[in-house]
Length: 196
Figure 1: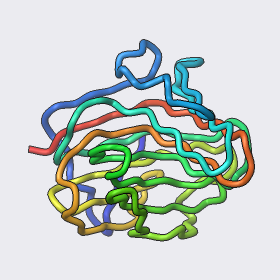
Figure 2 (figure 1 turned 180 degrees about the vertical axis):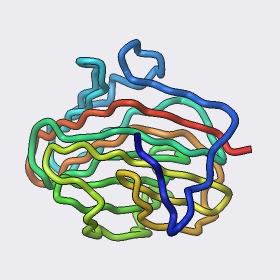
Figure 3 (figure 1 turned 60 degrees about the horizontal axis):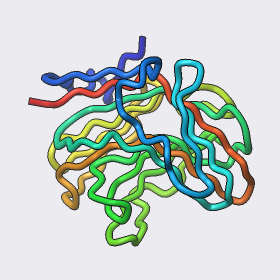
Figure 4 (figure 1 turned 90 degrees about the horizontal axis):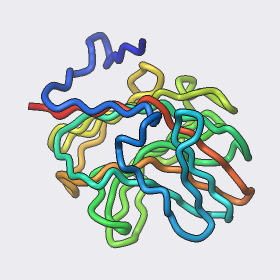
C-alpha cells in the first residue's frame, strides 16, 4: 500500500465520491479509438496504449468533469524505448487546453500546461530518484485543490504548482512517443476521490 507524504505530514486526504477501476470489467468507459498511429485496448486486466508513430501523444479520456479531486494510477512501459512519457492529463477542456503530469522510463518527470495548443513546461523534465526506470511500475498521484496542484510518485511528494488557468475538467490516461517507436504503456488500479 502506498502512503503519501508531503514533507513531514500526510498528504491532504480526499473525501466524497470515490471511483476505482482495475480495468478488468471495462467500467470506466475509457476511449479505445484514439486515431491514426495510436491504439488502446483492455488487455490482461489492464488498460494499454500503444504509440506507433514518432512524436505522438495518445490519451484515453474518462468523459467526466472534476474540479477538486485526487487521482492515482499504476503505470509502466511494457515495450519500446525508455525515452517516453506516461501518466495523466487532467482538468482537460479539449485537446488544446489541459494540464499533464508524466514520467519517463528514464527516471524523470514533467508537468505541462497547454493553452490554445501552446505548451508551457511548469516543470521541465527533471530527474528524480522517486521515479522508477525501465519497465518498473510507477504509482502516480495528482491532487488538485483550487489553484494548488500537488504531484507524487511512488508515495513520495515531488512538487506543488499554483496555477489558476483551469479550475475543472476531464482526466485522461496518457502515453507519448518521441523519436523511437513503437512504445506501449499499461495502466492499472486507478482511483479517484473528490475533495469536499
